[in-house]
Image (cartoon, rainbow, N blue to C red):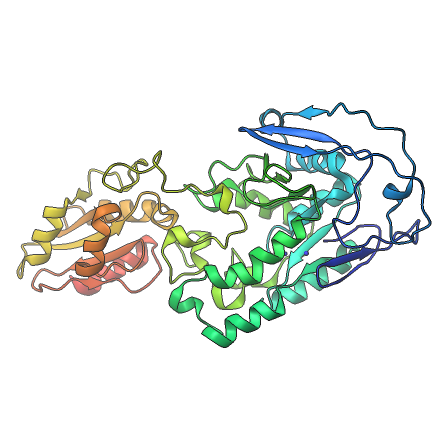
Length: 457
């Protein structure tokens, strides 16, 4: 992700940001090195408070490294702190347009807020910010592992909007230690979290420590079951802002209620530049080794960290918005209590005993195709329509279509006995063969699944 000011270029060195203005030569030092005299608010949301403490005005100085806001004398600030309920504000803005939400965010926080830009379709945030007519800043995290197309896109965006993106980089010593000890591609073996923590999460934490609010491109439809509750504004539950402590940072999500297709309609209508990777089938775009195009029937997040379980497909930047397997979501057997999926009269629901008996048979009266799934998995949810259609097409054909819920206490068995790697896993049990055949392709549209069945039955 990076930070930018619409009125001028911005340059950074390490974690320091500097800016010049069209109307002033005054420059700003590292983010977090000054306090605005007129910002004071306390935020109350879900028992968290965002307190921006009032700062007593200082005499005007000649120090050229201080911002205009910091050097202009101001009247004495009273001890009374204004209180704003951002939970209520989120409700009021829930049906507002992204443009209205963006305008409200920039109006409230001015230079203390910045847009987080990943180099994907979240360029829509920059377009909305431009349309408000207010100054805005943009920042991005340069992990050192991005696609060449993404770097070229950053340059195109800067030229199109006349801005300078403020890039945050990982700590060189930390990256060096990680690579020397574990190699360049350790995330394929032990998960992406460690690499993301070094290259993304820690640089983001440094960036946000200089802000009072940030703007993200999170949408509810990006990850069904995990981001479905994302509000348009919230107290950030994970990161700290300029004043430090819980509740010191606000997080704005102007497109939380917008469908992905509507984002793309907006980008086309406004002739906004887009990352060329989108034309190659990429939807969710991250680092080059961990991103690939999605196929028909796949959820957009399935192009990220595809070798891992669906629940791990977050890098940590939005961890606070993800649903955890807490007591409210998990029953006594360790399985989630969310609504079931693949509901159709054409589908057979297999119990543990049922799948064990099916696997033991050396000769079956009929062939079976079975999906091993978890209802919370967004990738299982994404193929639900295709699989139900497959069941309806195969009804009475001599091939049974079934489902087996393989999460919770069934997961270990499924891994050891049913070739479960990640959700969903699809198995075909041939009529005259004991061993099931695993569907290797990630194309989960009904035509691809039907071709798999026809090739084996």
